[in-house]
Image (tube, rainbow, N blue to C red; front, side, top):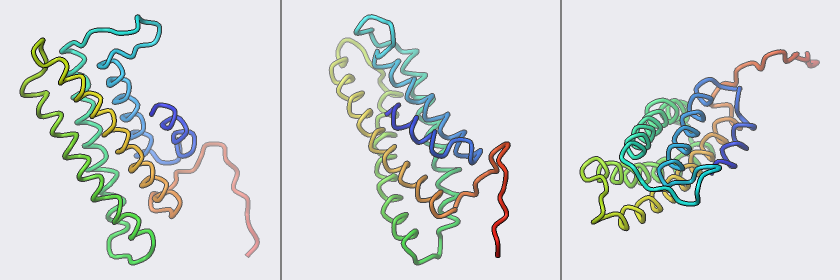
Length: 171
């Protein structure tokens, strides 16, 4: 997931402030997920779960979902709304899948907020963490398609890149 994020950042990073903030939020979310599940560079192979890491992950999760739904998706939906072309058709496939994915992720968040984890449910919690990792991966694939769609069709305006010289083209 981090490698795909890096490739996406290389492709579209620096071209739109909204996208840049959103990609940083995704990276923060992924780092907090890796910390929660105990995948830490230069550390022992497995580290125990802790409540602080869970709270941090849940915080980043809600921030990330909110940024996508209330800022990025909203902007793209406004631009696509009413059009009948292939862009609208492709977006029409992506949005419902994102809504289902959001419901899955928020169910995990809500269950963590209500119960957390302890010795009695630690194995179930590990399975839930694996499931949420898969749900996040599926979400990122959908969002990457949406971002590519937005950039390829110029739905999201590209900011001028610093020090880029515009070449005048003959009419």
